[in-house]
Length: 244
Ligand SMILES: [Zn+2]
Ligand SMILES: [Zn+2]
Image (cartoon, rainbow, N blue to C red):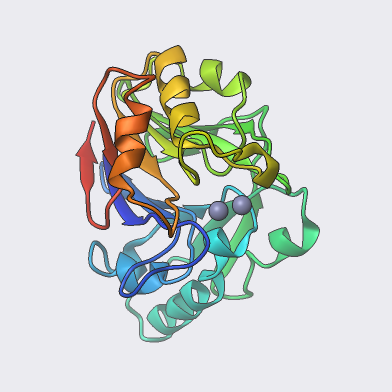
């Protein structure tokens, strides 16, 4: 599996970058996880839009779904010009009907549901889902292929259930919206030491801090996470790739 950080900001994108968006590829299958603000522009650095097979959404907050409409328009254009004959498949949960309905655009994109009790097979990648604790229904994702795995926490407060869900993964992308000592839970998020604790308790092999804040010295987030976790830790950055 190859994972590319397309966008890593929480809230809004800073200049020339994007909020939450990750490209996951395996054996020719290209799946995008979340499609935040600026994501469609950034994604084209790593793939033609017509080649994206599916998008999987964690939840329907703007910093994760802002580019749904323009991604659908890109498929309208690519279908119209004969660049592809494939509709775009967009997966989301059904606990927000308005959000779920936005995934479908007649003739270009088809919305399909996932749920936490079931796995989703995309090519040779297997997605599974776990509910997080956030002001709106949201799901963390685990992607497995050829015995390797990747976990994305999406947006959440610290949850013990995510320790089991992330157990032993090769790569954990943990949302880190706040610094050590700040109470992230009241906003439905985690801070740096909580991200580190999750990595330690789940015995993950590598930790990447993402969904980053627009304040403070972000390198401090890594230092703080290392107080809890002694494995490799780094900040997500646009264009960073991970081969599993
Ligand atoms: Zn978010
Ligand atoms: Zn959110």
